[in-house]
Length: 201
Image 1 (cartoon, one colour):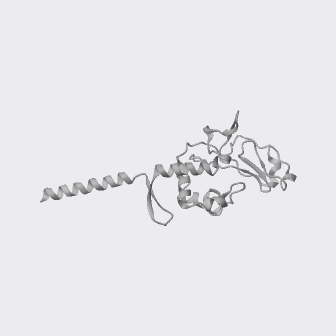
Image 2 (cartoon, helix red, strand yellow; image 1 turned 45 degrees about the horizontal axis):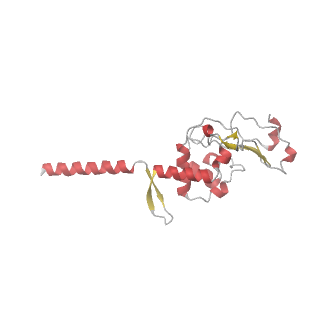
Image 3 (cartoon, rainbow, N blue to C red; image 1 turned 30 degrees about the vertical axis):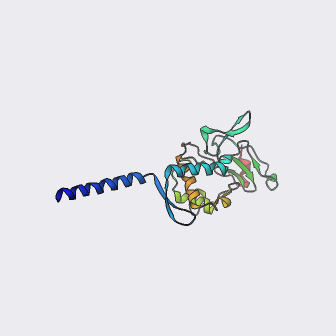
């Protein structure tokens, strides 16, 4: 009887270990009907990569290199935002009410709000490497800088009001993908208020 009990206990332990191993790397989300389902981490990341691609995140958040076909994403600095070393030309403040201007990299933007810079959203700590999923959801859902309360709003042209309508599963997939990207160290400059434009190089 003791031997049988030992065998049963061993089998239960094996089943528990196998279950944990099979579920590691998986996360729970809810489908359209609100039913919980387990999503494989790799599948979630692939979904996030697809969404980041079709939503045009690289258009602003990745520096560009000029090619015979025009500007293309600089893959070595993908999703790292406006390069900290790239100066912004002086802007005529009298034009701000009439124009919205983009720099040649499509990473710096000038308008009535002053100058804004595309954020580093790579996995580096100068990007979103230290962010939690909850921070990311708050940033997109509420337009909060770094997804934190009592911070400034996200500035144009970041289209967060549209992205805020994405499902939780999609936003979580995007975050999972961004956290999986190569870390690119780049401290993006702080925004420049309209009355400080004279300080630009």
